[in-house]
Image (cartoon, rainbow, N blue to C red):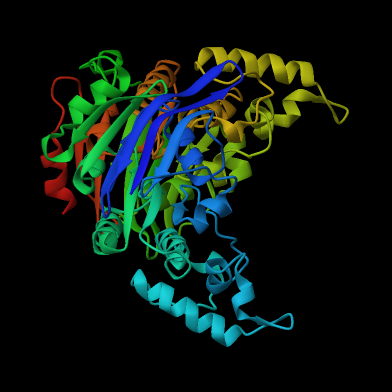
Length: 500
C-alpha cells in the first residue's frame, strides 16, 4: 500500500536520506530502528509531509504522490502519533480530537458541542478509552493522552477511502509494561483498518510487535529483518556498524565508593507513594532503585529534590538534617535532578545549549544584574567538549538536539554548577544505543569525580551494569538490597524474584 523507491533528502552539507527503499503492506506492522541521526525522523517527516523529498518517488497503492504539507498527508490517510505528543493540554479531549476539523460540528459559526462530544465518544471507543470527552486534556495520564492521540489519528477513517498508515514515534517511551501491553493489543486489533510504522529504541518491543524490521544507518537502509528471525544483538550490531562491547556499562571503570554519606534517609514515608524507606548514598556510589511501576522509586527522587514532601521520617544531606526541602534548597545543597520527561522538565526548548547549561546558576554569571555572556559561552563550550555533546554550537537550540545530547545538556547544567548529588530518573529513556554508551561513560566519570548517583534505570540490565548497590522496591517498601561489586553482580532473575 505504501512504497519508497530510491528516496533522497538533502539539507545543506548533509545527505539525510540516501536512496531509501521502504515498503508497507496492508495491515502490516513495520519496525523502524537506527541510532539518532540515522535518518528515521527524516523518513517519517517526508512521509508525513513535513519535508518534501529531493529524489526518488513515494507511491500509495502504486500511484506516485508528493505531500505538500502534513494536512495533505492526512487527507491521503497518513497519520502520526508523536513521541512528545501534539495535544493542547488546556483544551478538552474532544476539542483535541477534532482540532482543525471543527467545521463539521458548526452551523453559522456556532459549534454544536453535544454533537462533537458524541462523535468523540465513537473515536474513543475505537481505542477502548472510557473517559468523558469534555475532560480537560491536562488532567489525563500520559498513557491516556497517548490513546487520545491515536483516537485523533483514527478520525481519518471517516475522511479517507481505503486503509490508513499510522506512524508511531517512540509510543512506549514513558509507558509502563502493562500500558505497553495494552497498546500492543490495541495495535493488533486495528490491523484490519490500518498499517503501522513503529519507531522505537526498545528493540525487544520492536521485535515483539513488528512483522518486518528496517534497520537504518547514516541515511540508508542497511538491513530488512523478518521479526521471527530477529535478535536484539544482531540488530544492535547493524545499527552501530560494530559489535557491542562486553564493557557496554563500563564495569571496568567501577571503583569502590567512598565512606562519606551524601544522602541518608531514615524511615522516610509519603502516604500512598512509599513507606519506611531507609538508605544511604555514598560519595562515588551509584545506588539504583528498581521495582515495577508505582513501587515508589520516582516519588523518592522527587521528594529528595523537594518537588514532593514526605509525611514522616527524616532526611539528611551531607550530614545536615533537612526539613521542608524545596528545589531551591536542593540545588543550593549540591543536588541535581535529571527528570524522566526531559522535554518538559529537563531542558527549555527554544533556549540555546549555553542558556540551558547555566540556567540553574545565573548568579555565577552575572554582575550587578547583567549577564556575563562570554563566561557563559566559555563554560558551555568546555562542557560540550567534556561530555562530547554533538551540537552545531553553544548557541544551537537545545530542543533540536537528539535525545542523548539533550540528556547530556541537562547533566552539564548540574555538573557545571558543582552538583555532587545527582538524581537520574530513566536517563536513557528514548535514547539510542550509541548515545546510551556515552551517558554510561558520563555516569562513571561523575563517580570518579566524587558524585553520588541515585538511579532509576530504564532496564534491569542497566541497573545491574551501572550500580554499586541495588535496592529492590515492592509495594512501596524496600524488599531487598544487593551488593553489585564487579564479578559478583545479581542477575535480572534475582531482582525480579524480589520485585514480584
